[in-house]
Image (cartoon, rainbow, N blue to C red):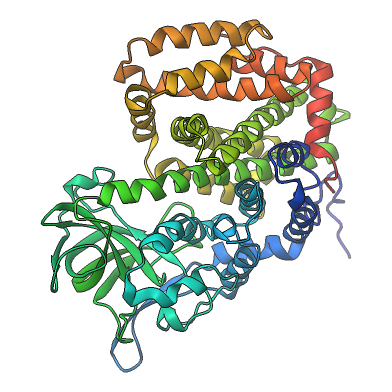
Length: 544
């Protein structure tokens, strides 16, 4: 006798084979608005390729098969290498081919290249986030290295600016493309790098570009397979920044010992290690005692990438939830037609509308560093964006998971991986309190920053009562900064900057709904049905 226990129906098919760029109306408009319209055709091609089932499977495989530390070779010699699944290397090849690691640093770069690169970063984040860690560090380190490469490493310039990913274990000068990692934090200090104990002694004459011997450790030695690391160590003149290559100029392995790989909550495709320096050689970048200043130049860029990466993960979570809600029926209607579900999804889509507008305004500011006002906007809003976007990502993905219900909680869904991935961006490159302290420091010490804010917000004054009230309240707080108010100030700064962008560029219903949702002290106001229809349509265009 043949048994048939049930028929499978009302089970939505997974989201794949969609165009990640063309389905995101807010992203397309931001790219057009912020001077990167020239990249739209390529972004559409990238979005189509990344949205395929094959690309999404590469992301799953890279995380299901995490890297492995190889401390010794077959003959017992120290190897200190890391083995990755082939999916990792394919994903890295795509990132390099799309120049996510160096687009704005090209000699023939076009206006808007920082914006175009931000869009490419967000698209890749929706497929696999671990590969973005080596890419963002390489991106942030490249301008410093191009400016101050020691003479012994002059052959690094060409591979730093190439579009080739090269995973071979050999000296950097012989490779077609390079990865740069960072080694800053130690066991006793974490974000307080001034407590670092790793010490550096000059081999010969001290000074910029000269070789030093390093002895010490790093609690997080990011991307240990990198061709070189930027490392903080204590020299006679104070905390200093060194380029520590994997291979020395004579081809010998540097004395950097990998102790173990971190067993992390998420970000499992990416290798994070603990390392010890046993008279390792490093070359001083800048002057002794300038290590924090050198690292901060790069840290600001990687902080911006943290916000971009979290936004990309949130966008993917919303896309998965929307695609499910359009197919799944409950209580006689599709989920998307249930009033409560429309409110949930509409508010999520509205939240991403605001994030997209602010992040791409910030990308434009990063490109215009010669302008004093833009530089001040960038310096203030980068930590504010990292704090707010990265914090918002964790409950956002959890909400998307609820849309799918039990299916979303199971590992066959993408959402558990997105959920585990979220906290790293909030922690890495300075956790929430560090970002808020940085915002307060800029407000207190950066010349012209209050005037810049007034200029940004006064332009849209009078268009929305929630915005006007919030700006008056923040202006009062800014007259007497209190560290205990750091989170509230940072949160309100971000919301006002986002609201200003929407009041300038979004439709009136969208801007008003966002301001009511985010700036009304009563909170949790319903989004009007007309705005819901518009914002949900913008969030789903082309999905499927």
